[in-house]
Image (tube, rainbow, N blue to C red; front, side, top):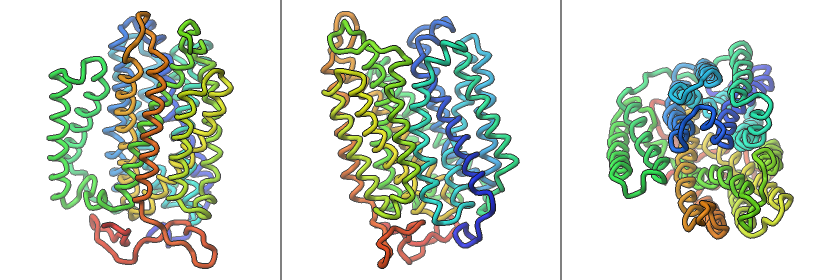
Length: 493
């Protein structure tokens, strides 16, 4: 029996609160580290090049673990794997808080990154447990928490280090993660939708291998050089391993990621948009604070501290969350596809404005509100479109791959924009203002492409009387068998 046909279990509001806490705790531990890398470098006694592995290790582990944990949740129970994922984050946070040397810190960050499956698992549990008319709003709000948690990390990093030292960057998330894990174990009921099956080990190894090769090459290319033999070799290996992975998954009886599902029009179009949004969002969180922290002596910088630059982004976080809260009602009234395109246009305008309207902190903060509204609209709509395009048994892996593609987009976008920002740096090593302007305009152009790509997303039929989008969008009535489960036709081409 699917979640839409079965009566909702009681306490789904409490389930939502626990899921939200778990997602925020995971995303927060990612956002807290980037703004204080120089502090970690000094405290751990390492080099600028080596401290970057604190981010890279977490990034790689998240990319690998997200789809695998999503698939395991669909197989053996989403609650069980959700608690496991939070347990890995807690263990990693504990080790990171105790770390006094770089090797242990990198190992700890790998464990923290393994919690990347919390987002697709949360989507799956919402679809299992919530009344159907509540699903779009809950999925939208949980999705918007990605932007909220990342922004909160930037805001809180400075005050936490000032009051608790760098160890506090890991003690604070640890407390939140432990509370979320314990609450999830005792409060959240186990999944109704649990088809069983097995995890294809070859597919998992190949997926991990091509993701590691791709993301390692992209993250290290600015340091090693895009034309270096190592980077070129990793990129070639990524392409070969990707082809092998697709071949293995296409022939498998129980694939890790069903290739037919990935060809569903509602899925692949949302993934294209997700890639472009990931590139813009992660780049924004990386370069807007850096731009604000540029010394006034540069002629364009505002000389903001880590704490102040984080506070400038706080309205963006509030706007994203507020929009996420309203996303369910907005989706039923205007349609998720329209919200996605509106979000893309809003953030595109925001990046274009920030390239030129940046003479004061309050101007940047107001522009960040516009960007926050766009991110909140787009992320909530994107999540709903993916969840609606696949059967409940594939919710975890489909939303996990969408999250992963956003991560890959963020990696590529950050690396490309880093090259644009640093090109033509002054003798003092500071980027020129034109470099930041070009980077922000490039991000704006990518978001305009996302809006155009949104046109390819299948339209959802609306109620002829109310003219509202269904709570869980309908799909074409033609059925298709996908991985042993019946998938109602979805408009695939």
